[in-house]
Image 1 (tube, rainbow, N blue to C red):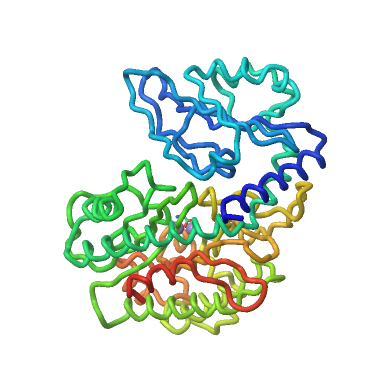
Image 2: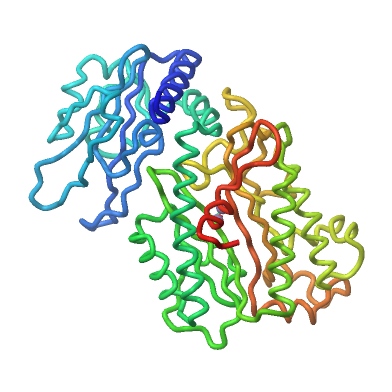
Length: 439
Ligand code: GLY
Ligand code: MN
Ligand code: MN
């Protein structure tokens, strides 16, 4: 069986189980359609319903739907309007077409007619803010119990999904190298972003999230995405957090660079790199991800201590919560069809959640690690004045050292890893860079 066929049979089996457990007969998964800006006839960029692309490697077929009833072949109602205003994305011959009943409709109002009474037994999964989905006479719309079940299962990736994530990392790493080269050539943030996209023939709407392209102190703004068109003067540092899609699966990679080859900041990057790699080496199935996040706070405290940013012992830095001022975000998140993949806090398919630690409100993943979960490991250390403000002048902090780091923004290093049944995880990101002969 091919990898995709195997994936499809796993997805079907997961839907069978989820539908049986929640008491529904069938689903219609709507791919969604573009939304329009207020009082405007220009749409926002379209994003496909992730549950649609879970079944099919189709991300550019708005208005289409997939109908699935356990025990039957999925039916794909592919919307291909006759429209002289717009081009249609070309649907290439693909393996998926062997495993579905394919119905091409030129008017998506015809989907309901085609399904007839089947629609009444089906649950709608997807957006229904507009016609045709708004009027479909379905049994229920987006029932939480069914979504919980399906979302919980999505954390464990099939081999086909892992292949897609591997390739997404290969694309993104190639673009990262182009961006790095543009940075060292003195380019502006905007020009670096353009180099990134050009390296993989992508446009901004092809990115899974807004790339973070940050020179100097902009690196301390966690989701910085206002690209300056002027080159920075002087240029010191570069933090880039940027991804790519492959078959609808996401890469999410961060790297940090320094213009200076020696000194405080390049040493901090290298120390963070060592801590990040070391932490990944410790990952094993059965651990809780929240514990890894806490382990990273000890790593951060060591860095704050060793680089002289905070006074006192490593223990006191952790106990006083100072590591959270410099590393306020989570260690990472599940990744797959969505960059922040769903169900990061779920304890079981019934929708029970893991308790959240109020000290770590931004942590997106608190699940127990299982084989073939794919998640990011993205520790950071930044000078964020808003968080340090309450401590200004406090003797526990080395303000001179903090002032020295501020113009560099901060450091983040982010890889995606696959948890293995035993031993260390597969690092999709480092492996992709290694193929390019980049460490
Ligand atoms: N790029 C968003 C994140 O790293 O989570
Ligand atoms: Mn991430
Ligand atoms: Mn990221």
